[in-house]
Image (cartoon, rainbow, N blue to C red):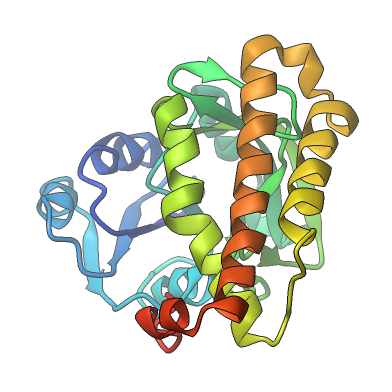
Amino acid sequence: MNHISGNIITLNEERNIEACILSMKQVCSEIVVVDSGSTDNTTNIAKSLGAIIIHQPYLGDGIQKNVALEHVNNDWVLSLDADERVTKEMAEAITNLELNKKDHDAYSFRRRNMIGERWIKQCGWYPDRCIRLYNKNSARFADTKQHAAVKAKKVQNINADIIHYSFRNIGELFAKPGRNFSGRAAKIMYHKGKRANALSPFLHGLNAFLRKYIAKRGFLGGVDGFTVSLSSAVNSYLKYAKLLEYQRDPSVTKQDDFNNIW
């Protein structure tokens, strides 16, 4: 039997945490939840399911996920976000791995990104392969604060899927870029000294749409393909519009705390 520790980072994930933990229990002998200050019932639910809770103010994506490595008892770690699920085919594939042979230090899986219960196969949303199972002694997440990935040398691709409930509905698809993603990205760019001009929002938005809808074949996905492509355009447009606003309007720049991007 493979001995694997589960790792989940959380912040107010009471809607997701139970289903995530139960799916991981198919293959994990222990689960460590690194929580960054939930004010809902996330940690109570996780505790009731036997998870170990580590309280850690948010440090950024990769750094936060690596916190669990100090607390797990197994060499092999399965890391999921709270809105991801281990499928039965994935659990079966992991169970059949011979992890003690040390032929590989990490395994990647396909990821089904969902809007509601709709599986989005175009726009670059599938197979969206990502490493989620790795040996902590030779692999770990990069210590980056945004969109971190596991760094490993000997990776094997597994033909099984993770389910990722990316957005509950189209409204959330458009709300998140406007509320969180674009603002954070604009802050990071401004902090690094990157600057925009009057055409930047339009050109980057158009490029994002064409990349998703044409290059990534979003046109094959019907309404959802168009919607995802449009959302990507809106996110990119807002990111550069906000960056331009920081440059042009000192009163807006003063409103935001650039020492607290995360």
